[in-house]
Image (cartoon, rainbow, N blue to C red; front, side, top):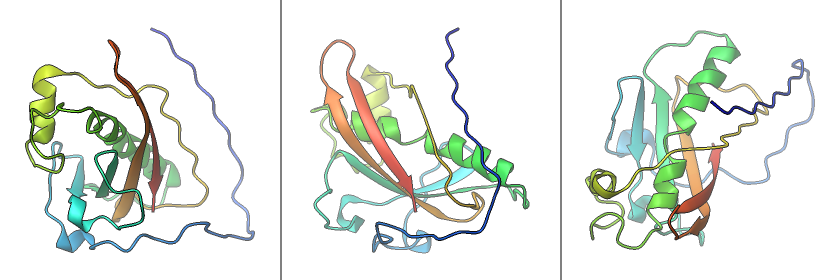
Length: 166
């Protein structure tokens, strides 16, 4: 087994907060169909037509509403752990959907696309890193916005994805 870990911690403190990007204008979680594969968390994917027209639409972008199905209490460590687990769900999707024909010819937002992809391919997340800049609540709806930044189509099919929880 090969493992490389990097951890950084800071005590909570008061200070100035600023967001560089506004929350995207998308349908709320009550307006999106549920598509779960695990009882641990709920996920609701936005269809292509529901994603904002901000120049980043297409097969390389995934947007999901997600939340833990368990009440996690007030301990931020529990929320960070649950968010880290949920966040590993989509980077592979964004990279895989950018590979031409990977879903057996189905449109990338078709509900069976990923099942068709898995018949012929395997995907795994490597070098997953997260930074938590403020408290979050994984048992409440979070919008997860993932962009595929790079895909290399060769024998290894490598992809790099970047994601933000809003």
